[in-house]
Each structure stands twice: as C-alpha cells, then as structure tokens.
Length: 87
Image (cartoon, rainbow, N blue to C red; front, side, top):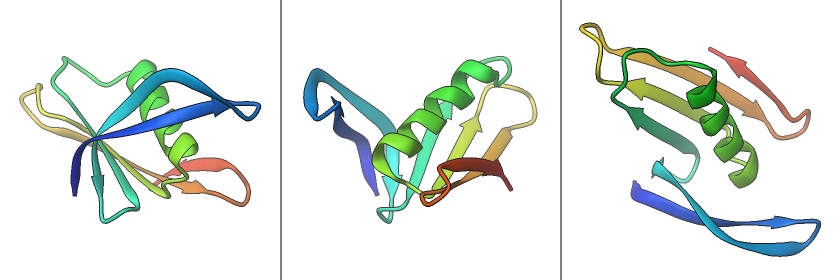
C-alpha cells in the first residue's frame, strides 16, 4: 500500500497546480479513505468517488472509525461505463 497517495489532475489537458491525495492506495487498484466523524454523508462519498474517477481506481472503500459501530462502504468503478456502484 501507499500511504497518502498524491496525484495531480489535469483539466482539458492542462495540469492543475493543486495536488490531491487519498489516504491509501492498496495494491494499485483499491482506494481507501478513512474518516473519524459521527456519520458518513454525501460529501465523503463524493470525495472517494472523485478520487476513484481521477485515478481510474476500480475499487473504493470508505471507512469510518468514529461511531460505536464502525461503518464501511465499498464501491466499484467501471472504467468503461464511468459508473460507480455499491457492493
């Protein structure tokens, strides 16, 4: 795995200055975002989905450590159809 995996984004072929990073990139094809908040919401899901799209990472895991019972959401990104589905 790579902790704090940094990647650059380009817009219409022009590289942007800002660097993004996901918490972990595992085995080159799993994006892992870890949170410690009261509950997962749309903002956290969108962040993971954007990372998956920008890096063409097919598997995404959103893990929340904060509640009494840990929350874990898993997603699959189909590069061909550009769709993300939960599994």
